[in-house]
Amino acid sequence: MEDDTDVPEGRRVERIAIDPSNKEAVDDFFNKSVAVLQESAMKEILKKIIKVIEPKKQSKYPYQSSETKIKKGLDPRVRYPVPMVPPWWPKEGVIHKEPDHIQKEGMSAFNYSLLTPD
Image 1: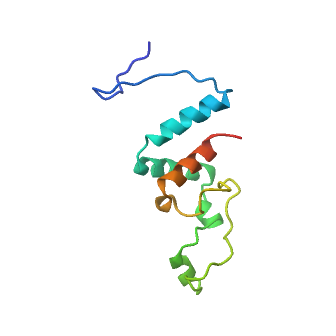
Image 2: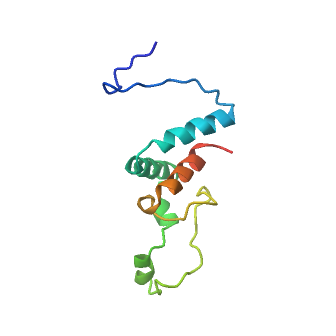
Image 3: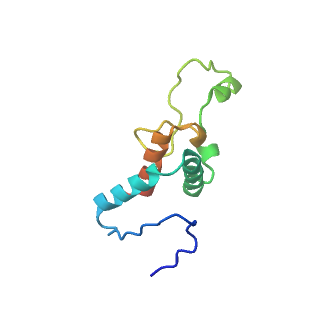
């Protein structure tokens, strides 16, 4: 039996075994795990994942905010063509913007898409 010394007192940790080849079980486990994370923790996880995947993401694929448009002399109220988006960025459900500005549902989808291979 494993040692539970890292578990806060009064908390029960349920350990389960998952067969990594069972996509449905992995998906279910991941979705339940992400659902209990607080939004702030999810943002930090997402930022770290992005840093690992694309260390120079901001220079290669900058987020286009209103401030960025103003600095470039563009009208911030106009929708310009979508900026270059990294090939690993989710194709659906997550707008290309900084993790701090993505809603929790989008972050869940983003984390899921990055951590689970097709």
